[in-house]
Length: 328
Image (cartoon, rainbow, N blue to C red):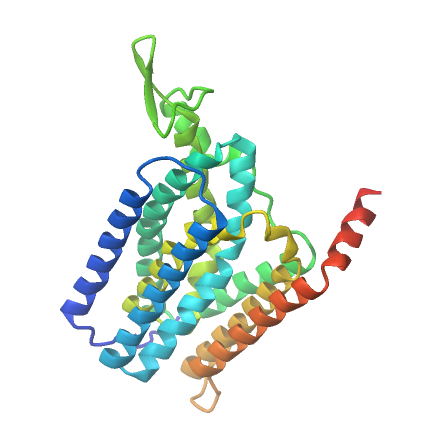
């Protein structure tokens, strides 16, 4: 495999510090605002979602000003890409909550700890991905193959099913500590007969983390097609992840209406796969092989997402008809 020179930005230490401080302060404020368990309605979720999106865009503006237009465009593209791919997570969240019969008032607490775990694991995976890509350009072909396989599964309706109760994380948790059958508020551990046992809420967190690990298989290769700079890929991922909880509660109950969204995500993943192949060919074969500029990638993602949402909302009857046909 050929070696390639990594695209490394001269990121000031203070910018890393500002990012870390923003994430930590945001998580603390979010935790304090939701310290009492309650059902999160549409208006509250929409307000928080707007806050997270605004925060991500403001940080993107800082990236534009400090690191330049190219870095700013890459950050925005990567953030929007991760935001779109994360919609799949929302369907899995709904599946997990339904499987474990999680009371709505406790769901935010589960997702809060799920987000913290996702920030840690994504950081590890992205760091490893950046290190590999910076040394072995040919791995981009492997990443492209992963994305094309995901496209095939989506278009064929063969996406991997996720059984929350049988996930590795949940099975491992049950081996380490007994899990009770009863929720006790937002507690993760209680004492029964003098012994510490886990509540089902901890098993739900484990299932959420396991789901994120599965989605990272598509997410990490996709974002590395946009940039191989650690700062860009991690900050964009982090801000997309931070807004997941509010987005889930805002769209809860409406997810089934976006029946064209999976097709849109397939188009986006296929496009990113082509982008990866062109990048690899440009570096390995010839400089004359064109690469897809980040502004073009950003435009494609915006157009495909908008078209998927509009078509889903304008043709809801088609989804209902198909569903009835399947049930017959």
